[in-house]
Image (cartoon, rainbow, N blue to C red):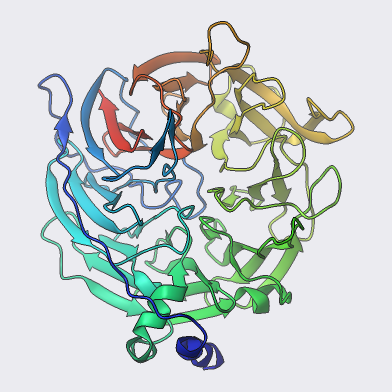
Length: 507
């Protein structure tokens, strides 16, 4: 009741503001060719990084060849472009149900209003759409949705509201609303809450239909929310979860992550940074049913011991591996950041990766990587951009083996098992390569391939068994798209976002 009371008092603490905006139009565009693949039951992609652990692993259907553009659709009807750079380019992951319905968050107005589109995964045909009143507190937030195995999709609204629809594959039910702190509180303070309270992370769903997300507030501490499938909500503020009054929210765009057994939920909680100082940030482990805090650990720069920094525009998300270890990318150090690494109960800092920032690692079975002779059962596929020398790479790292950092040999980091350079120079006369433009890559265990975007305008298949970029598909002429996720459909189609457009590629 204390938290609900505080939220109800927001009307006295903020400047009132009305929500506004309008929806726009955007038609699907079919790619070349006449082949249409029928919907095929298969593994679903229901979260950022597919599952509640955000491992970005595909299922039992092999990824299709990158032969043609099957269909495409806008994810931003009013993108903000500056020269050759897409300034409004942090877009949420498409979700694909087991019956091959694609659920897309679409930005429809410059100030950040959104709608949800449901499209047929085989053809791109629009099945239905739902407008929202969501407006972020900052343009740097990515708008992300979550779906459940039972055919329900959740999507954020204004004032911390959560909308949902059932029956997403067929004729969907009416839009329903859940206000985690109470519909009566929201109704009494609508303008104030719309202006000051916002869901600021992707929505994470578990196999039982429970939902987890973070919220931020311009006037008080944000926190973490759990809503069960019956609509019952509990929450905890970031300050209460960390025991640090300066910690104000779950980090922007950092999805909560669940342990493999579903009993623990992990969230990254951060403070605002002011006057050039680095505020404290924590990884917190909570009971996934009660949100009782189990443990916490402060995020530190492995080289200096100083507070690690979480960028305001970062979309890094915790990833939980099958052994329970937790990974999270942060700013700080050389080459812009580290991949921090902890054991399951957050009592031990383990070997970090040599790059972090705006990235979620993809889980790779060790058996998928050709020539690997180490002892780890899984490896991590990561973006490994190098801003010191412009030699941008992708890397597969061994979380249990070490080497000196490329640019700071005094620091020990995860061993590079294989790496692959970006294949294209930004300028033919210069040394700098195009960047790998992903915040997570989609891994297909059937073909031992990772699917990744590059700022040269191509989608690549990286064959980890041979360490070759074995296929590529031209998405555009080369555009500096901000980091976005790739995904795999239940029929093996590959989904990639570039230049504010969702591209669906297959055979």
